[in-house]
Image 1 (cartoon, rainbow, N blue to C red):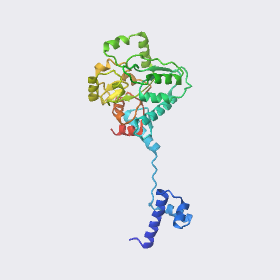
Image 2 (cartoon, helix red, strand yellow):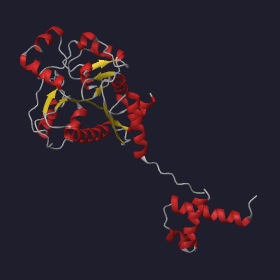
Image 3 (tube, rainbow, N blue to C red):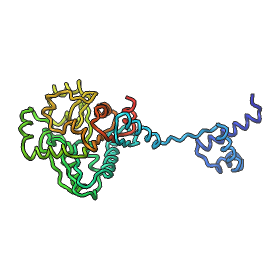
Image 4 (cartoon, rainbow, N blue to C red):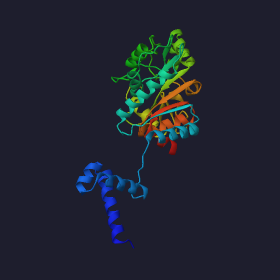
Length: 316
C-alpha cells in the first residue's frame, strides 16, 4: 500500500503530465497554474518518463512504409515498390497522389532513346497531369491499346497523349482504334494495316510500360464506353476480378473470356512481363483484387500504390 506522501507525489506527476502531453500546456503555464517553479515542472515531467508513468510512442509512417515495401517486393518479386502514405479513402485523392508518385518515378528512370508505352483512364490522366518537362533526348511515346470510344464518355486518351508528348518533346504514336472490336475477324484485318502494325510493334518493343487495372463495378470505365453488351458485362462481373490494361482476368490473372480477348486491341499480358519497367499504378479498395491478380501473375515488376492497398495486398 502506498503512503500518503507517495500517492500525493504520483497524483502530482500524473496531473502535470496530463497538462503537458494531453492539454498541450507549456512548462511555464503549468507552473503558474499549480503555483510551482518551472524547474519543478521540468523535473516532474522527466521523472514521469523515467518511471514509466509517461511513455512516448512515435508512429513513423516512413519506417513502417519501408518495411511494407520490402515485404511486397519479396512476396510478388518486384524490383521497385512506391507507396503513397495518403490514408484518405477518397478515390480521387488517392488517384492524384499516385499520379504524382508515378510521374516522379518516370522522371528518375527514363533515359535517352527510351520508348514509353502508355494506356488511358483516370489513373493515367493523373500521371500525365503531374509530368514535368524532361531533359532526355529521343524519347518515344506509343499507345499500348486502342484509344477510340463508342459512346459519349471520356477515356482521357487525347489529354494523356498530349501531356506525355509535351513532357518528352515528341509526337506520340497512337492507335486510332476501338480497344474492343465487335468481331475478331474485323480486328484481325485492321491490325494488318502497315501503320497499325508498326505502331503495335513499337508498343511491343517499348522498354517501359505504364498502365493500371480496372474493376468490375457498374461504374467501371470499360463498362461505360460502349464496347460491351449487357450480357457480356454480366458475365465479366460474375467471372472476372477486373481488367489489366483492358484484359479481363480472374483472381490468378488468367484471361476469363478468350473470345472477348481476341477482339481486344491491347498489348498482351505476356508482353507486359517482358518490359524492363512494367509499371502498375493503382490504388483504392476496389482495385485491390485486380492488382493482386496482376502481381500474382507477375505482369508488373514495379508497383505504385497507396498504403492501405499495399497493406491489403500483403495480407490477402
